Length: 317
Image 1: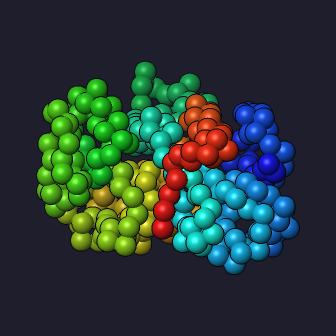
Image 2: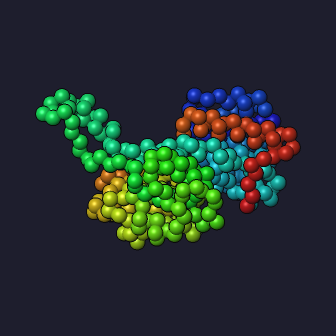
């Protein structure tokens, strides 16, 4: 089997190994593949692995030897799944690998907003503590998490992991999910309006659907406490970003920690990059080495299962 990895850099920038896939066939790994080179690089491949490189109906139709498509992510919108299904091509994804890493990033953002560790460390390096007349100083209010309310929108695996961490910080946890509420211990389920109005922190953990596009609207932002924080490690378009930038800049919201945006990467004039007390990380919540190793291991297992005639983690149109 000839295996072609179209964009291997993000999954493995050099700290992991492709040997697992290499043991299953003849492998060619490209760090990045521009759209105009997809067909050329994949034309002889029987197995194609992609992360963000788009495999459209037109491209799939030009790959006559193709027998399998593997996506090294949970989301698989980069593949025209109906076109693949019509060809009888299995399309697989990796549904679970980054739960703990994403939950960790939620609290990395939240602790940054409440403690501003990097900022204060930078002022110390700049000599400010050495020149200080007092034994301590701080530039922002120092906020204790214990007793605050964490509102979690979407109570799947990641939402539940965030709830466990919030509980460890002695936070009260509210949750909303469109599905029937699972057994969740001390978590209180409520409606979205109550969650946004009463939470000190709102953290988003739901998939992007046509129904929840713009879920965090200007109206919902207006319902939030001016002392509250918004954390988004899910999908950028869940948030009305112009409304969020306005709320932050006007001081109607205390701060935001965002690992995802509606446009990735953002242009230099992107409104949220200049918004007050808004901290944006480059979509890296999933990218700890441990999570990427699980992603690699499952990708290899998916291909191996296909070769053994029993595909797993397949997705359908």
